[in-house]
Image (cartoon, rainbow, N blue to C red; front, side, top):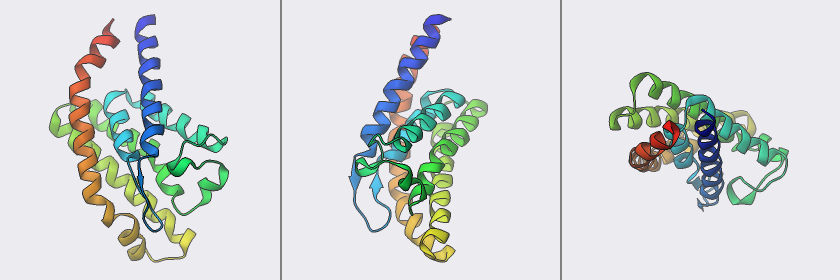
Length: 179
């Protein structure tokens, strides 16, 4: 039991580090950059139990809030949490909850992993877009056209990558957690 908890903590730390690295893989775009953050969130949600993935993403947000440069473009601090893209940050733990809960009940087949990640990704995009409405004083349509629509195809690609990698790692993770 102790080994299982230790392996889960180590895996969580590795995935948190991956999240920080993926946050720096960025293509700057007006208002919302294209990053690999949602890929990392999807992989975290696919590999860890629900509450562990939620905790990892909350720790990521806390690290950024206290000033560690973990967000896209090495940004950090409380100001990031009120900016136009803060909704995406807030959505990451929710993405993990949605994806993790779906996987808990549907299992971890390719189809269930893909479906859960797509639903989580769409929720993340919608939350991020809705956050921009009062922040940028724009309409819902403009927010969706700015913060959701351009990211659907990249989101699907990232979800597929997360699912493929999660499936390949799942056996290794289960073997380590069973020890």
